[in-house]
Length: 146
Image (cartoon, rainbow, N blue to C red; front, side, top):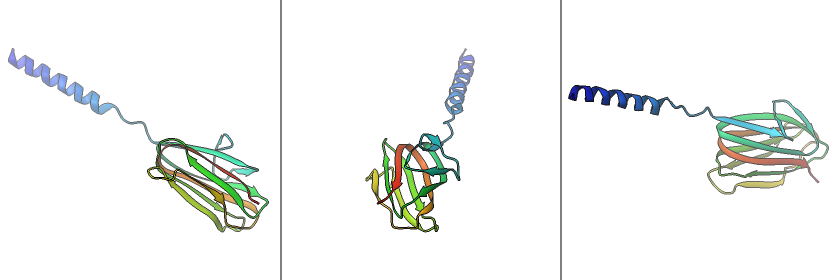
């Protein structure tokens, strides 16, 4: 009787261990959007940029082209949910010169930034948005400066 009880206990404990270990966490994901569309590298945009990003512990980087007829751009970014990980925005002018390189760390304040880029050359600007090990969501925007 005791032997059967021990066997049954061993089977139950093995089953519990198997069930407890077999549930995998979903794979990390992250998405970057511009004007309600998922961004692919080398997409082209004209006019104001209104973007958002989400992450579930994921990382992604997207670079797109943006036509800016002026020499500066107004920018804004905000993490809108409890977040961890990094959000980074790098903007290069038509000559490839970095006119903005800002980041938000989801684990510390501040949770937003805004301002005007450094002056650059008007034309086809490059915008790189990255989220790294990001868990949460947020938004960003770009528009031609003054």
